[in-house]
Image (cartoon, rainbow, N blue to C red; front, top):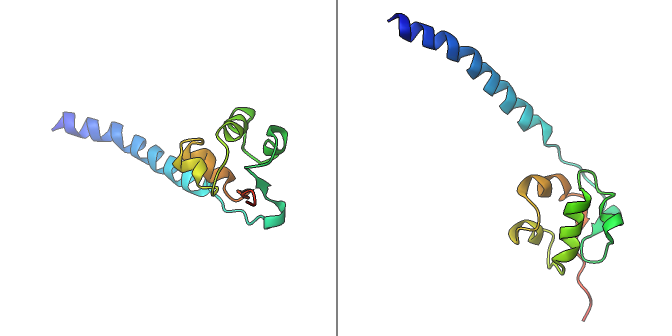
Length: 101
């Protein structure tokens, strides 16, 4: 009985820490409404232009350039170019314009 009580006393503070972390993570994702004329085109922008997107590093920008062309911006996620965390950070800042044929 004493062992069970001791175990519970050790676990209760840890459960509270996990809940606080989950709450912080849920609040850290915000939606940003960027006008379409201010979005960066993932099919035609340079690495330097892509790096102006908040949360995008040179490495991720290089991957976007390397795996072009894209039919839609969600190709970045579906084709494994970006991780889901990076895509969630930048999806409101990008657009995929296709070449006219």
